[in-house]
Length: 289
Image (cartoon, rainbow, N blue to C red; front, side):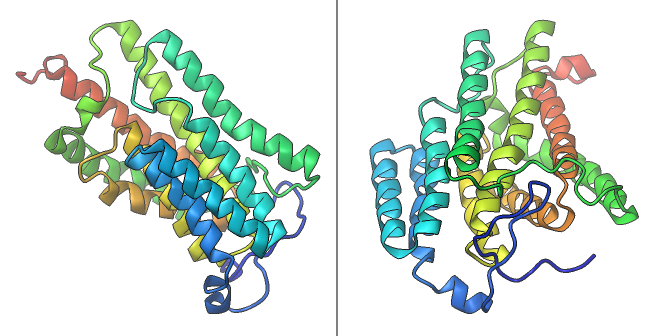
């Protein structure tokens, strides 16, 4: 598998590709003044979704955009798109709630957080870097299939221990009726797909125009993990969600395949769903409550 270019610079590309790296060394790009506004914008997610201090989060977000405007106008445009998505997401509570009205609200808001930046990027800025390349480089390799199997094993080993030992499963509603179980299944998987559309295809791809891949990945993981924290992956959840977010970014960079990262994510989410159902209803599985 050929290595990804070291750094990413802003330029127009075709929809099926991932933004290429800019010329220059990793260290020089990482230590440039462009890093400060990127840290501020991505770090605002910690305030918005992690510690949930909205006013502070918005202030840091605006400061980051202001610095970006002074430092690099191309960076400003891309950080503005990320900021638009973050602000849209921040208009609702991300706590798991599978009531019908809340699921509809989630669908509208999260869809808008992907669609609005995409429309601005494509039709206002007239660029084509944000894209959703479904097939990527074609058929999956043997290594990719092996990793799929490893994902299932890791999920089965790690997720039940995490959710039950930490009590994190209680951050999701108890489901006892078939209708509620179905809604939980739909919600868990829909959010999983959305994660890849926003954090990977949008945030990560835009950051890769300006920074080394490894640094862009760290920045997107900051946003990704903050979102997952408010969603319910709390306690020692970041020990799982941080590497997960980083690996998803790295895999997408190597494969250019949305279908692959979505498959990986949904396999994890299938186990998440089963563990939540089991933890709330152990008697369904022949285990005394």
